[in-house]
Each structure stands twice: as structure tokens, then as C-alpha cells.
Length: 434
Image 1 (spheres, rainbow, N blue to C red):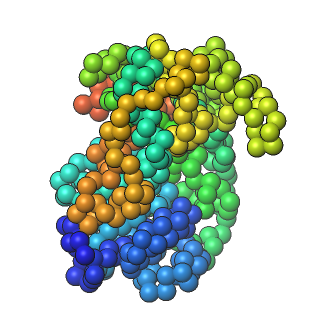
Image 2: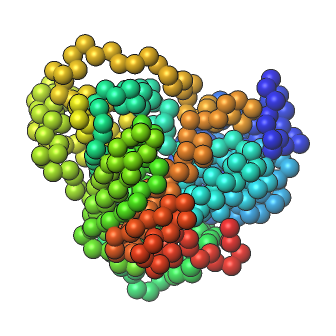
Image 3: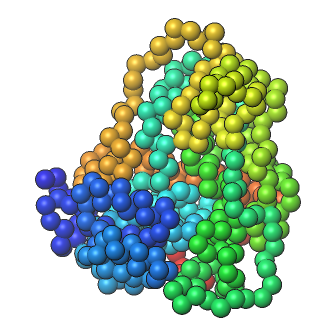
């Protein structure tokens, strides 16, 4: 069996990883099951909700149960090789950084972090501690995404000047203020641990836990943070986007509590590695590119049929990605980049494209497990995933600051808006400092 890389526990045997799960419910449940199906040992489950722990404990009866991941890592550090972090966004970097500093490999759900500063920190920690990492943007493993990167970089659509990415999110409440009063905290929930690094606030039933936290600025990163690590992944890689120089957001209205119901964010990227400057647009809440930008996509959609064999309406799907080049367009109609189309189709009849240059994936979770055991880094390891997350979360900074940001990427600050600093790096509650 292959040797398990740095961070090997005293008790791991037969080349199997001993994995601890932080955030056992929701997406954490499928993350856990997918890693367990590869034959790895699930040795600990951590969740702030005892009901979730009890349910998942039935699936993994040998796993020790905790509500506080700090206590879990302190007590079981020598028994753990790797962690899965699938908590609300505001816990991602805190949990991962503790584990990584202990030499534990880390799989962290998207968005990798809650803030720009945290993304850069996790990227550094992965390098400094030489641990195997991966972010949970599963589309990275899709053949279609990797092929799209090859095709774009081979020049099939020419020089790209615009990218448009849109999402059907949010599908949770946003654009609302904090409710008055408080409700009794359920016996199963440790509310203080749910808050973690975030400021204290009263518990309200069916407002934050278990799913509606995504729209709240203290806990989530809105539609942009939730989905752009998926939908913007392919163009980020293909176009080597790097740091933007300017970010400006408009929205349906934002307060100090939640992200807006709708937003549109413009990123300006300079020339880089021989590629021309380009403009990147993000849309959510039902806003989409104007029809004149998406005309070729609309024409293509009008030629297709739905599952019932009926012609589709000439309108954009709920989510998608469009790259506009001077030789053609590339359109991906889903969140993960699994499919793409070169437009107009008549110009690409018989197109075979370049030879394969990016290795195909053995499976999203297997990539990480093999990396933990000394194999090559996963395609969405933190060196690239943290970079992608950092750039995406600049949109959240622009939304919350409320003004155009002139961005200095290396210095991680807006040259014209010092007030944005509070959104680049947040203040952590005592006991949860990173």
C-alpha cells in the first residue's frame, strides 16, 4: 500500500486514511460518504447539532462524536490524518487552519473561505505545511471542463475580451434585515459553537440554522460565494485571470446584515501572460447578460429541444457561462462546466481541437485521497482554489463597501477605499482567532 504523506496518524493502518469530518450534515454527509466509499476510515464526526451527529453516527458507529472541532483536534490529533470541512462558510478557514497547522490534509467545501485574507492564508499554510488539499468544487474533475480549458488555451475562439457568468442563486432568503427578538435554543443545538468566530447574536428559529445562513454576511458569502467557485472555475483557469485591477458592484439594495436579492458585479483584468485585458461580469438573482451579448447563445438554444422533444424557448438558462472571443464564443449551460458549445456552430463544424494536455480525473474525491497518500496534487488544490476564491470574494467586498474598488492584488487592499479593509479581513471572536 502507498505510504501516507505527512500528517500520518499513529493508528492508520493498511494505507488507509483516518479522516475526521467537521460539519457532518448537509454537503458534509455526501463528502463523508464519497470518501468512505473509497475505503478510508471515518474516525470522528463533528457537528454543532446533536441530532445531526446522532443520524450520521448511525452510519459511522465507530466514529467518535464532537460538537467542537477545536476539542476534537486537540483530543484526537494523533489519530487523524485528514479532515473534511463542510461547515457554514464562516468556519471554513478557522477549522482548516487549525488542522493544517497540525500537519493534517484538508478537503474544504466551496467557497474555500469566508474572506479574502483567509483564502490567501490557507494557500500559504498548504505550502508551508506540505499537506494535500482540495476545495469542493466538483466540476474541476469533469472531462468537459478540462477540455474547455484546452480548447480555449489553444485559441479556438481567439482572443477573449468578455466573460459573462450568471447564477440562479440565491435560493435562500437575502435582502432582509435582522429579525427582532429571540427564540429558545433547541436542546440539540450548541448556538455558541454555531456562531464560532462570528459576533454574538440572538438565536431565531428558521432564520440561520440549518440552511438559511448563506445569505447572512456574518456566516455566508451570498450567491456569489456559493456558486462562482463552480461557474467561474473554467474561465478562471482557461484565461489565467490573476488579480483584477478594478471591481464594481450594483445590486437591488444591500444592508449590513444580508447580501442583496440581486447583484451584478464587474471585474476588470489586465493583460497577463500574453493575453489581452478583459472584462468579467457576474450576475445573480435573475439578472443575466443582455440579449445582444448572448445573441449567439439564444440562437443556439432556439435550435435545441427539451426532454419532451419540444423546442426550447429562446431564453438563457438559469445558470451559465459565456466567453466572447474574436473568433467565436464558448457557452457552458450548467454550473460545473461539464458541457460546453462553440458558437456559432456552423463555424466549428468538423472542429477536433488540440491534443489532450490536462490529465483526466480518476474522480474528484479520489484525487484528494491519492494526494494525501503521496500522489500528485489534486486539480483543485489550494494553490489554485485559494486564488480563485480570493478573486471571487472581492465581489463580496465591493458589494459591502458600496463603491468601485481600485484593487492592489499583491498588497491585498483597495487603493481608493480603506474602509473596505474590514471586509477583506474580519475580526474574530475571542477564542476563535485564526
